[in-house]
Length: 308
Image (cartoon, rainbow, N blue to C red; front, side):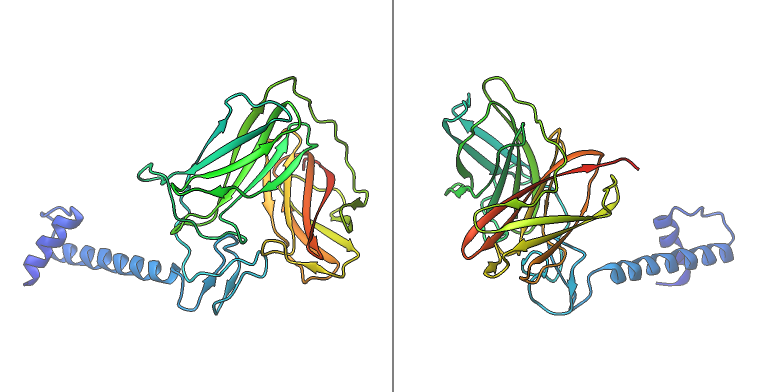
């Protein structure tokens, strides 16, 4: 292809006026071609590099070799797919839930492109799905694992003790995607019981350990990072629980904000550090789970967060 034909082709592609002087056309084409080449090279540079292994749940965790995430225990992957949301559909049986009765919750994860049910999942912390349930009065907490069915749905029997609203956080990992977190709301018939909680950092005793909590800064501020230092006593016999040294669920008093976190630093000893950014001022109820000698312990604290 001669130069004139090339110019006509680039003029057509770039929508350049044909009546420009030939020298100007050549300069503009060279500038545009250089910019296009630079954009392509920039795209390559921004892509994951060979040997860059990333945690799909904590994308700030990188390694130069395969392995597991030191924070949550998940398997590192070579390239993280686009973070596309896979919505979850929830139904209940019976349709009217009553306090104290055994009911069934059913979950279906939907493909965002086709709307069809997803039936292939990766393990996330040793399970295909985690469900965290919290009551409106913040007195009930559950961490459960639904049973997978042949059609890709999940079934979970529940016995909810209080009337009112419950907030639910689902944790799942569709194949070809990234770990997902989605919140849902359910209601149990009867008069609701609003929360009556107060700030409390008193040591929390569970099945076979007691945990104390120290905050840095002592007064958490919304939107800024707060370090939470747990000290577990006794510490002998501590074990990873579902792939991590601990699991934390933090819920705002109005049940709008739900966070599921893993330790920032932990090595099986008595000290465990979480880093949290509380999104808004207010009271937050914090449930943290540790496993010691095969027994799961859930400790509870309530933290007051102030505005900047």
